[in-house]
Length: 342
Image 1: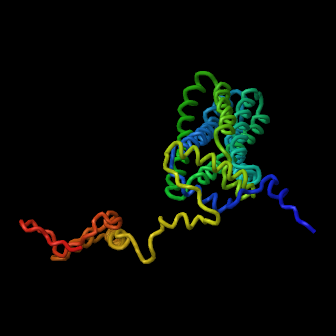
Image 2: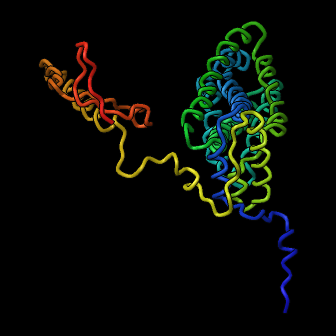
Image 3: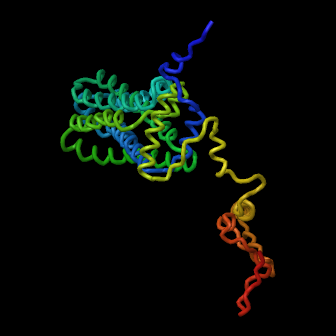
C-alpha cells in the first residue's frame, strides 16, 4: 500500500521546512528595535488612549444627566459603576476570545464596538437603554486593554521588553487625563451628547488596526498555523530590515530560542562587579539607616577605604575588555606613573 504525502505537504496550514514555534520565537529575538515596532505600538497605543478617553466621560456627563432625567442617588451610582462592571467582565472574557480568534481581531472589534456604542448613547432618552449601552461599552474597553498589552509584549523581543510595554501602558492614564480636560470644556459648552458623538469618531481606528497591524506570529504558531506565522514573520523581517539594515539571517532548522540568545547569557560563575561589590554594601547601608531612623540613634559612619589598597578598574568597561590592565600600586599625585601589569 502506497502513501501519498504530496497532499499533506500542500495542505493549508502546513509549515515550511524548519518552521516551528521555537524558530518563530528565535526570529523575534534576533530583530532589533526599529521604526516598525514603534509604529505598531503607536497605533495600538492610540486605540488604548481613546478607550481610556471613553471610560472617563461619564463622570463629566453625570451632572447633566442627573438634571435631565431626574436621577436618584441610586440611579447615579448605577450610571457610574455599570461601565466598570462591564470592563471587569470584558477583561475576563477577552483572553479566551483572543486565544481563539486572534489578538488583532479582538482589538479591532473592541474599538469598533466602543465607537458604535458612543454614537448610540447620543440617542438615549431614558436611563435603562443608557445603562445597557454603557455596560456593552465597558465590555469593549475592558476587552481591548489587556489583549493590546499582550500583543505588544508578543511582538517585542525579551531584551528591554518591560520598558517597551511600560511606555505603551502610559497611554491609558494619558487618555484619562486628556479626556478629563476635553470633557470639562465640551460638556458645559455643547452638552453631553456632543461629547459622546466626538468619542465615537475614534471607532474608525478599527480599519487602521486591521490594515496596518499584522497578527501576532507567536499566536499563529501556538495555534498550529505555522505557514501563516512564517509568512507574517518574513514580512516583519523585511520591514525591520528596510528600517534598520541590521538584521541577521534566519536561524537554521532546529535552532532553539536559547541557542540564539547564548551570546547574551553571562558565563557560569561570573557576576557583575556591581552585584559583587556595590550591592551588598548598599543593602547594609540602607538597613543601618532604617534601624537608626527607627531607634532614633545616629547612623554609623561609613567604613573608610583601607589605605594602600590596590587600585583597579572595574565596572562594565572592564568586563567588556576596554581596560584589561590592573594596577599593582595605588594611584598617587607624584610625578612617577603607577606601574601597570597586564
